[in-house]
Length: 223
Image 1: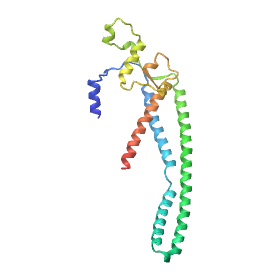
Image 2 (image 1 turned 90 degrees about the horizontal axis):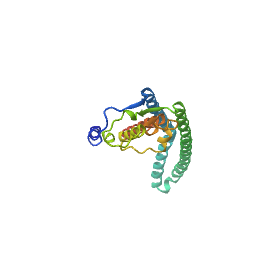
Image 3 (image 1 turned 90 degrees about the vertical axis):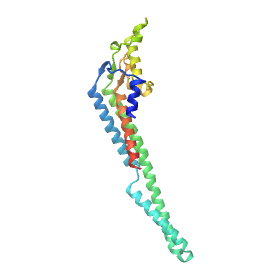
Image 4 (image 1 turned 45 degrees about the vertical axis):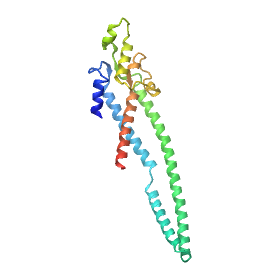
């Protein structure tokens, strides 16, 4: 897949070998990527711990299956095993009630976990935005972009438009920027927003990428 992508980008979608950066904070980008990876891992481990069945619930579930099997065997013997069958059926009902309580507790834990994770996400996003408010992690310098098609026309294009066009072509076909991307650029100089990446976008990219990696690893291990 990687080879095919490289071939396509070199032939059908040629990208420049030198990107005219105006700003690039390599250390901060690496820090945000690492923080996003660790944060996503911690969130997923916490969610898994609180949403998965406890050892007690698993034991009760196994015990219930055993009681149902024994009760079915005794019931098949007919009236001669009425007393034993009644005891087992009462044990089944009691175990089912206990299992329902454990399931309800797990659902309550899952709901509390979802609320806590939502609050943590909002707080973490706010912290990242405040720490890097108005700072672009990466920005394109439009004055360093030379396009033969543009040079051959009489139309005068500003450096901001050059940088914006270059940025869209660089990330084609990912040219659509949603509300989240716009929020991540809040505070950055308006002339740079069309051709830059904010700190929140880097942090979210790390979380999304690492999340997909974790999902693939979980699916592979569960096969």
